[in-house]
Image (cartoon, rainbow, N blue to C red; front, side, top):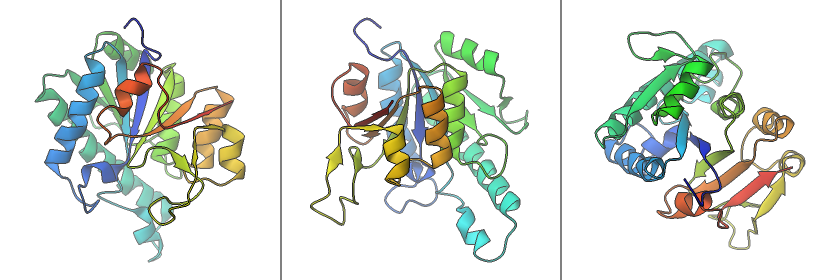
Length: 238
């Protein structure tokens, strides 16, 4: 791992990343492409933990708009993350990457229960650990789960994988004049209401001094450049 800036990372993936062009459902080829990116990082010796969302399977707003109870809607989303985690685990293991899935909701037939010390041991043994079911509690996003797990595991950075190459002051797909930020503070993210991660997640990272790096996972070299400390994406720090 000599010459690398980060040695233990928390990778936050949206569920839509598995949904292909439509963003819905599970596209196995997309899972394989993401697994290939993770494998490249893993082969450098970097310890990799992953948190994945479930927006490709269930979006709670759909239920809330029809009067569904928030806790029920969030619980359905947590179950969706387990499905996505199993798909990613399978894609990684078919590429010969040892992987463990841990769940914040106990379901021993499918995943290990989340135990911090066991997760750290898996990472030290060179396994990729995928954390599912968010925090195990409704009213908290998977962004917050990523911030929590990244802090608990003493990760060097939380990498938010998106389909754009950083944070902009407007949607670059809709505004050609949108300006990209290379560096931001946690407080700037909150005060500007930039839609990177929810305020709870950003605040948790700020309070525990966990940097957030926003980059384009679909840029084949972005992750590796970041690990070498090269300028890429947008770095959010104190």
